[in-house]
View 1 (cartoon, rainbow, N blue to C red):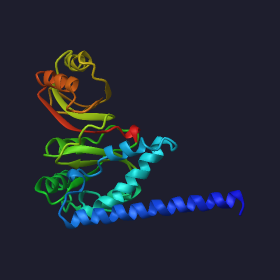
View 2 (cartoon, one colour; view 1 turned 90 degrees about the vertical axis):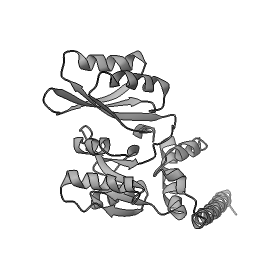
View 3 (tube, rainbow, N blue to C red; view 1 turned 120 degrees about the horizontal axis):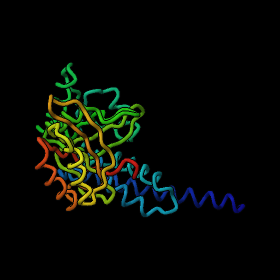
View 4 (cartoon, rainbow, N blue to C red; view 1 turned 120 degrees about the vertical axis):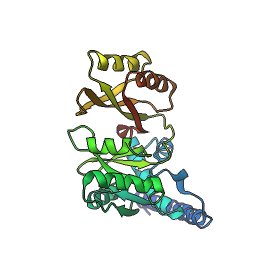
Length: 267
């Protein structure tokens, strides 16, 4: 046997061992489901697990290792408890989820009016009929979609994950906030009165606490108000961000934390 043939046999043997371990893991996941255990703490698409395991594969490009484990968990988690995801656009959401590696059941909003359909999908999450909502969040070259931001702000849910589909960035909204990953971003919606220097005051509060703002978008609001979507590095539970938000609340008519999630560029 040549060295090349021997090397190929060794690789095939390793692949077979990996397949056997995955099968054992799948059986354990199914057993956990039969015992009534919750999958992944109830958080759809918890990327912290992929981040942690990808760090144990230094020979692979980091992004490739994370995609590998994203697909791994997307296949195994439903064996514990099948996920139901509320959506507005069934075709678009299914295509994005398939690209992401997930094939959970979809609960499609029946309302024909987009605003009502968003509220219906998020209401399904609040009532427990769905584990999460999958909503189109941002189109290429544009800011986050105002109607989606408003719907999330008016709901009980929080963004726990952002991921890219073919035509848009999508958000997963769940009731339980995502825990810290170490590479988080936080998004929030702020409404302030249209007075000279108010935006500078808001930005100054974040700068004073060394919170790095990564995105600012303005949106139409009621006469006399400005409305802004802000995104920053860090998790909503980080002390500097908590302190900055507490100060900004005193300046704002409304401030709604939309959620913390792993930075999309960290994936």
